[in-house]
Every structure is written in structure tokens, then in C-alpha cells.
Length: 397
Image 1 (tube, rainbow, N blue to C red):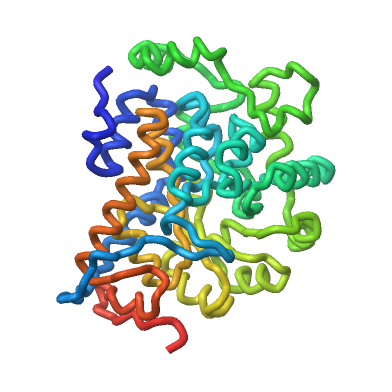
Image 2 (image 1 turned 60 degrees about the vertical axis):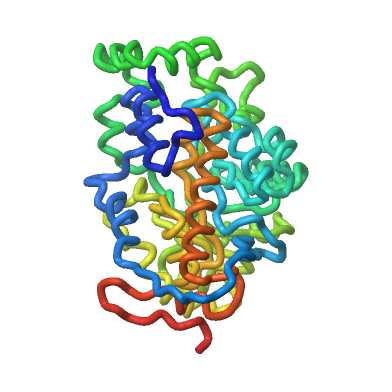
């Protein structure tokens, strides 16, 4: 089926359209869809539309830098790759593509707790640029061993995702028969036949892949279906602040909590000893009527203080989205779907192209504005609220 080569991909929307042509509908919908009415999914994108930027001219922007400091080290850019579950189903070795892009561009990649490739394999490629997302289980021994493995392979941070107390109700997935095992109908079989490139690759590589981070906790030789069932049965475990304190004791490195939206939860996370938070509503996939994460950034910043690392993911599709978040006081940004679309449609070249697009757009916008770097004072003065025309002042003023 026709697909655009990487050098013809102009924006992240092109990556999505290419993935939509390549993937069967049930798989495209799994990536693109959200919970309930998908109101949260739409609002994540729409939230960025109100922001405008105020340029300063007659500045030498030849030395413009997009590097960003976070958790005691300098990264090559302000955008990392967010965790995306089961990425290797959409394109074999997708997680390793993410790891390679992260290492090449010196940005973090958060490997999903329900990835296909193992953290050990990805760490051989990405080194400390690999962060591991722990999906906690009801079995404390498995939790402790996952943390041990992440430490042993040199992960740069451990990320605890807290916004999945129950399985989400995603209506696209229900209609498409997404389940363990999948519920195939004549329509889904026909759709697979109409997408032969993906279907043939899926069959040639053995069908449903094994989630290698979970496989060690089942008998040797367990199938992809067996491991998937096990991860679902164990993956929606009760989490409390006591669990987080325990993880803090087990993990000596940078500990990040993902899914925080309430200012009081952010403050408690810092008190527990967490090193950073990721403000997120799970990309609109988990809770349809959650507040827009971006609206609570000022209150969260006030709760944790100016010196505490506050990151963000959800709806980021443009370099301008990244800069808007940095102007709002965010210290680092993550995006997920564009990278998975790139991996599905074009493999390694698609993932590389996604990050190149983000970085090129960001650098071009910075030069247009007269913004020379992302860690200097007064970054907020480049942005105004497009609806209320409210000036954004630097933190601490």
C-alpha cells in the first residue's frame, strides 16, 4: 500500500495518516482512540490553540539552542518519547526504534510497562536515556524484581504511573473486539486482508508477540497470549502513598510519578521524596471527563515550588506546543502517539522523522521569536494567552 517516504513527511499529521493507511482499523483505533466520548482526547489538542507568541526582533539568533537541563543533566532537546504500550505489536522492534532515536538525539525514552521488548535489550541501545515505567502488580515480589532489573540495566529514571486504578472503557476498542484474546469478526478479518503489509509481517514474526518484561514471571515458553493475560490480571493493582514510599526505598535513582493532576497530590509526591512529576491525563485514554491537564499547571507549580521538576504529556503535536508548555513553567515535555505512528508506518525512519519534525519546528519558532535558549530567564515573556490576552510572567516574580 502507498506510503510516504520519511523525507516527504512534513508534519506529525502526515505520520498519523501514513499509519492509518498501513494499519488495520482496529489497531489504528487502538492508538488514536480515547475513553468514553473522547472529549478529553479532543480537548488535549484544542487546549494548545489559544496560546500565541510575542516575538522580539533584531536579535542574533544564529546560536539558538534547544538543549534542556533536567534532573541534573543536559539533554539534546526538551521533548522525550512517552510510554506507549504494546508498541511492538504495531511494528516489530518498535520499542528498540524508540530507544535508538532517544540515544541518537540524547533525549529520554520512557519504556512502557507493557512493552514487547525487554528493558534489558532497550538499555543496551539507549543506556541512561532509557527510563522505565513500572506498572505495579499485586505481587510485591514482582514489583521489587522489576525495580531491581531496571537498576541493573542502568535505567536513567523509574517512572511510576498512578492514573490507572481500573481498566479504561474505550468504546472504539469494544466495538473492534480488542480484548485478550481478540474477538475477530468477518469485518476485522477482511480489514486485515485489506492491509496485507501489516498482516503478513504479523504472521511472519509469529503472531501475538510476547511482552518480554513480564515473561520471566511465567513458566518458560509461555505464549504471547499467556503473558498478555497475566499482565492484565496482575496489572491493575491497588496503589497507595505507602506503595510509593516503598518504591522510593527500593529505587536509589531519579523517581518520577506520572499521572498527577491535583495540586495536593503533587505536593504529597514531593513530600514522599519523588524527584519529579509528569502532569498527565493519560492522553485522554483513561478518564474522559478529567480536567485539562494544562489548565492546572499554575496551581501545581505553586504547590511544588519553582525548583521542583514538573513535566507534561498529552496532545503535543507541534514544536509550538512544546514552547507553550515551557513558557507555562513546564521543565520537560513528552509526546507519544506521533512516535508510534512513525514506527508503525515507517519503522526506524518514522521515529527519527517524528523527533526531527518537533525539533525543527521548535528551533524555527525560537528563531522567529528571538528566543536564544530554553533554560534562560524570562522564557514566559514570549507567550500570551490568545483568548484572555493575559501576560505570562516568569516564575518567582
